[in-house]
Each structure stands twice: as C-alpha cells, then as structure tokens.
Length: 160
Image (spheres, helix red, strand yellow):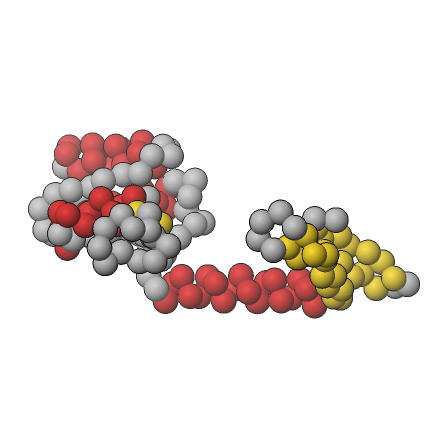
C-alpha cells in the first residue's frame, strides 16, 4: 500500500489504519510504517489540528474580515468599483489593486477574497509600495536557490 488510510472494524470499534511508505528520497523503498488508531481519536485530533491551524492563520493576519457589503458609498464611481470587484472575485486570476493612500485598497482586496471561491483559504495581502522595486518580482513570484546573493537556501515560494 502507498500512503493510504482505510477504516477497519474490529469487534464493535472503528479504527483508522494508515500505511506510510519509507524510502530513501529517490527510488528505493525500505518498507512501510503502519499506524492504527481509534477512529474517534483520529477524527478528534484532526478537528483539533484544523482548529489550531485556523487560529494560527487569524493570529498571523491571514484572514479577510471585510465583504463587499462593508464598502460604503453611493456615488456612481463607488457602485462601479463594487460591481467590478464582484466580477474580479469570480476569476481565478491574481488581482493587483493600486491607488492613493487611504482610498480603501485593503478593504477591496479583502472583499474580493471573501466573494471568491478561495474565501476559505488564507488571505495574503502584500503592500508593494513597502518593497524596493528590485525585490518586488521575487516576493510576488518567488525564486530558485542561487538566483541572487542573499537569497534563502532552497529558494522561496512566491506570494502568488
């Protein structure tokens, strides 16, 4: 079996049996580790883990609080901006929002995220104005190890 989990019954109890292959990181497989746990304990641990992950995301600010309904204003331009934000939310594309300080870029970014299919995933806002132009590309798209002096060993995954 290859990294597989199955539910089994032994008498009146349900267990989860999980097989994890052990290999050398290339092609050679040494064998398998078998984990057997009460299904109820496994589900409780899984729920606890997901709850902890969710709390950590909130602590790090990876959640979007605002929705399109939170964007106030009745002018034609504000209604147009809200309608466009709703359209952008239906796309899988990344969105770049720019404008002067104080116009509500963060509010629109969170609103678009919460209206999108990705609403249950982490929200990552990146203030491009705070980054030197020379680092912007590597922060957005990541880089490979050795791409430039001072880069992290192993490279870095980008924000988008």
